[in-house]
Length: 379
Image (cartoon, rainbow, N blue to C red; front, side, top):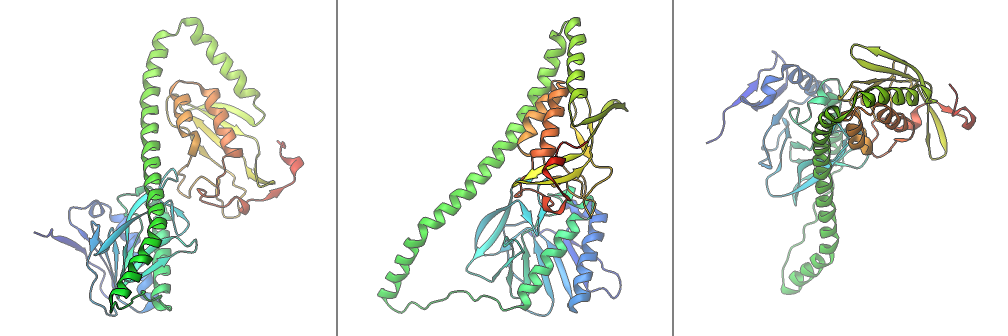
C-alpha cells in the first residue's frame, strides 16, 4: 500500500511544485520548503517549463513519462541496476559538517545520461524529462539550510542538469548480439573491465569504512573525555587544582599568536593576532580570529573582520559557521573534556595556520590576500 503524499500547493500562476510525504521531516520545515520552492520557480521562469520536485525514499524510482514538464527526483536513482556513490562535495559545497563523504543512491547503470558538476563529480542522472539529483535531502543535512548553502547547492545542481539536458547528450553504448562470437567478445570485454570495476568498488567500501570508523572514534573520544573529566576532578588534590590553571595560563598568554584573553559569559574568549597560513610555498593573510573555549564544551571560532573579499572566514569554516576540524577533532575533544585548555588552544592555533586541505576546503585559500614570507610573524 503506497503512502499518501502531501503536495505543497503553489501560489496561483506558479509552475513550481514540491511533493513530499505528509509525515516526512520536510513537512515540518516550512522555511526550507519556501527556499526550495523559490529555487524551482527561478528554474521555471528561466526555462519556461513547468517543474515538480519529488522527495522520495530510494533506492529506485520509476521515471515519469517524457514531456515538457520536468520532474526532479531527490533521494533515489532510476529503477534498475542501482550502484552507490560517495561524495564530500556537490557543486563545490560540502555535504557533511566535518567534510566527510556522504552516501548516495545512484547512478543506475545502462539508462539515461549522467550529470556532472564543474569539478566533474557525478551529481545526477537524466531519463527523458525526469532528473534524478544526487544531493542531500534537507532532513539529512539540516546545517546546509540554516543559511543559503542548501538552496545554492540545489540551484547549481539544477543548472548543471538543465545544461546537460539541453546539450548534446552522450548516447548509451548499445550493440546487437547476433552470434556466439559476438557474445564471446562481450564476455571477454567484461572480464577485462572487471578488475578496474572491482578496484573502484573496493575504494568506495574503504571510504565508507573509514567514515564510520571516524564517527565511532569521535563518539568514543567524547564519552571517554566525560569519564576522564569526572575521574580527574575526583582524583585531583587541592594543590593540583591550584597549580594546573597557573601552568595553562602561562602557556596561553605567552603564545606568540595570542593577543588577548578574556572571560565572557562563562567561557574564555581568546583573540588572536594576524593568522598567516602557508600553502605550496605561498603565504596568505587570513586575518584575526576569536576563539571561545568553554570548559568541557565544543570550541567555537569566528572572524570578526575577515580579509577575504567576500567575507569568508576561513577555508574550513562554511558560510553558516560550520567548522571542519579534520584530523584534530578527536584530540581536541579529549583536551577540552579533560580541561587541558592550553593544549586545546595550541591545537586550534596550529589548525588555523597549518590545517588547510584543498580537498575539504569550503573556500580555496588562494582567494585570500597574499603576503611576503617575512610578514609571517607579523602581529
